[in-house]
Length: 145
Image 1 (cartoon, one colour):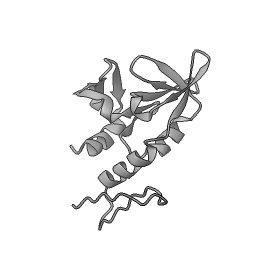
Image 2 (cartoon, rainbow, N blue to C red; image 1 turned 90 degrees about the horizontal axis):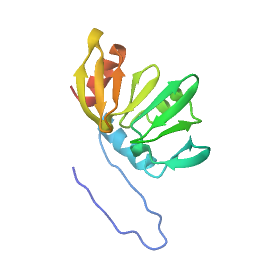
Image 3 (cartoon, rainbow, N blue to C red; image 1 turned 90 degrees about the vertical axis):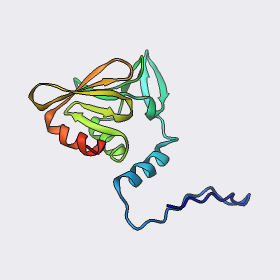
Image 4 (cartoon, one colour; image 1 turned 30 degrees about the vertical axis):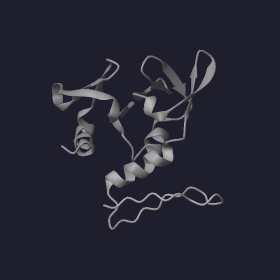
Protein backbone atom coordinates (compact mmCIF):
# COMPACT_ATOMS: atom_id res chain seq x y z
CA UNK A 1 0.00 0.00 0.00
CA UNK A 2 1.25 3.43 -0.91
CA UNK A 3 0.37 6.54 1.13
CA UNK A 4 0.91 10.02 -0.32
CA UNK A 5 0.41 13.34 1.46
CA UNK A 6 0.32 16.46 -0.71
CA UNK A 7 0.20 20.05 0.56
CA UNK A 8 -2.73 21.72 -1.28
CA UNK A 9 -2.59 25.20 -2.78
CA UNK A 10 -3.99 28.02 -0.62
CA UNK A 11 -7.27 28.16 -2.56
CA UNK A 12 -7.78 24.38 -2.59
CA UNK A 13 -9.94 22.51 -0.10
CA UNK A 14 -8.43 19.64 1.92
CA UNK A 15 -9.24 16.37 0.17
CA UNK A 16 -8.70 12.66 0.78
CA UNK A 17 -8.60 10.37 -2.25
CA UNK A 18 -8.65 6.60 -1.79
CA UNK A 19 -7.65 4.33 -4.67
CA UNK A 20 -8.30 0.65 -4.00
CA UNK A 21 -9.32 -2.53 -5.77
CA UNK A 22 -11.53 -3.90 -2.98
CA UNK A 23 -13.43 -2.08 -0.25
CA UNK A 24 -13.22 -4.20 2.90
CA UNK A 25 -14.52 -3.71 6.45
CA UNK A 26 -11.22 -2.20 7.63
CA UNK A 27 -11.29 0.46 4.91
CA UNK A 28 -14.94 1.29 5.69
CA UNK A 29 -14.07 1.69 9.37
CA UNK A 30 -11.23 4.04 8.48
CA UNK A 31 -13.47 6.13 6.20
CA UNK A 32 -16.24 6.39 8.79
CA UNK A 33 -13.67 7.19 11.47
CA UNK A 34 -12.44 10.13 9.41
CA UNK A 35 -15.98 11.31 8.66
CA UNK A 36 -17.11 11.02 12.28
CA UNK A 37 -13.98 12.62 13.74
CA UNK A 38 -15.49 16.10 14.00
CA UNK A 39 -19.07 15.01 14.74
CA UNK A 40 -20.01 15.39 18.38
CA UNK A 41 -23.07 13.99 20.08
CA UNK A 42 -25.37 16.07 22.24
CA UNK A 43 -26.09 14.73 25.68
CA UNK A 44 -28.11 16.04 28.60
CA UNK A 45 -26.58 16.05 32.07
CA UNK A 46 -27.77 18.02 35.08
CA UNK A 47 -30.20 20.04 32.94
CA UNK A 48 -27.46 21.19 30.54
CA UNK A 49 -26.58 20.18 27.00
CA UNK A 50 -23.05 18.84 26.58
CA UNK A 51 -21.14 18.07 23.37
CA UNK A 52 -19.50 14.65 23.60
CA UNK A 53 -16.81 13.11 21.41
CA UNK A 54 -17.99 9.69 20.16
CA UNK A 55 -14.64 8.12 21.16
CA UNK A 56 -15.33 9.10 24.80
CA UNK A 57 -18.49 6.97 24.95
CA UNK A 58 -18.04 3.50 26.46
CA UNK A 59 -21.54 2.30 25.59
CA UNK A 60 -25.11 3.33 24.84
CA UNK A 61 -28.01 1.78 26.72
CA UNK A 62 -31.77 2.00 26.25
CA UNK A 63 -33.77 2.04 29.49
CA UNK A 64 -37.51 2.82 29.68
CA UNK A 65 -37.65 4.35 26.18
CA UNK A 66 -34.69 6.62 26.94
CA UNK A 67 -31.13 6.24 25.63
CA UNK A 68 -28.11 6.93 27.81
CA UNK A 69 -24.47 7.45 26.85
CA UNK A 70 -22.03 6.06 29.40
CA UNK A 71 -18.68 7.82 29.50
CA UNK A 72 -15.75 7.27 31.87
CA UNK A 73 -17.42 8.81 34.92
CA UNK A 74 -20.67 10.45 33.71
CA UNK A 75 -23.89 9.30 32.10
CA UNK A 76 -25.60 11.55 29.56
CA UNK A 77 -29.07 11.21 28.09
CA UNK A 78 -29.28 11.16 24.29
CA UNK A 79 -32.17 12.27 22.13
CA UNK A 80 -31.24 9.65 19.51
CA UNK A 81 -32.86 6.22 19.46
CA UNK A 82 -30.68 3.12 19.75
CA UNK A 83 -31.42 2.04 16.16
CA UNK A 84 -30.34 5.52 14.92
CA UNK A 85 -27.05 5.22 16.81
CA UNK A 86 -26.52 1.73 15.43
CA UNK A 87 -27.08 3.01 11.88
CA UNK A 88 -24.82 6.06 12.28
CA UNK A 89 -21.94 4.02 13.73
CA UNK A 90 -22.44 0.82 11.69
CA UNK A 91 -18.90 0.80 10.27
CA UNK A 92 -17.00 1.93 13.34
CA UNK A 93 -15.84 0.31 16.59
CA UNK A 94 -19.40 0.40 17.94
CA UNK A 95 -21.12 -2.95 18.18
CA UNK A 96 -24.63 -4.08 19.11
CA UNK A 97 -24.09 -6.17 22.27
CA UNK A 98 -27.74 -6.78 23.18
CA UNK A 99 -31.24 -5.52 22.38
CA UNK A 100 -30.66 -2.57 24.69
CA UNK A 101 -26.89 -1.95 24.40
CA UNK A 102 -24.37 -0.70 21.84
CA UNK A 103 -20.79 -1.13 22.99
CA UNK A 104 -17.59 0.71 21.98
CA UNK A 105 -15.12 -2.12 21.23
CA UNK A 106 -12.13 0.18 21.75
CA UNK A 107 -13.13 0.58 25.43
CA UNK A 108 -13.05 -3.16 26.23
CA UNK A 109 -10.30 -4.21 28.61
CA UNK A 110 -11.07 -7.94 28.39
CA UNK A 111 -13.79 -10.45 27.53
CA UNK A 112 -14.85 -13.45 29.60
CA UNK A 113 -17.21 -16.25 28.53
CA UNK A 114 -20.35 -16.23 30.68
CA UNK A 115 -23.32 -18.58 31.11
CA UNK A 116 -25.47 -19.76 28.18
CA UNK A 117 -23.04 -18.68 25.45
CA UNK A 118 -22.94 -15.04 26.53
CA UNK A 119 -19.80 -12.98 27.08
CA UNK A 120 -19.01 -10.41 29.73
CA UNK A 121 -16.96 -7.36 28.72
CA UNK A 122 -14.90 -5.58 31.36
CA UNK A 123 -14.53 -1.98 30.23
CA UNK A 124 -11.60 0.33 30.87
CA UNK A 125 -13.65 2.27 33.44
CA UNK A 126 -14.32 -0.90 35.46
CA UNK A 127 -17.93 -1.41 34.35
CA UNK A 128 -19.11 -4.81 33.12
CA UNK A 129 -21.45 -5.25 30.17
CA UNK A 130 -23.09 -8.53 29.12
CA UNK A 131 -22.97 -9.45 25.43
CA UNK A 132 -26.01 -11.55 24.48
CA UNK A 133 -25.32 -14.90 22.84
CA UNK A 134 -27.13 -13.87 19.64
CA UNK A 135 -24.53 -11.09 19.15
CA UNK A 136 -21.42 -13.16 20.05
CA UNK A 137 -20.94 -14.34 16.45
CA UNK A 138 -20.89 -10.73 15.20
CA UNK A 139 -18.50 -9.79 18.02
CA UNK A 140 -16.06 -12.52 17.00
CA UNK A 141 -16.30 -11.40 13.39
CA UNK A 142 -15.59 -7.76 14.34
CA UNK A 143 -12.62 -8.85 16.46
CA UNK A 144 -11.32 -11.18 13.75
CA UNK A 145 -11.66 -14.33 15.89
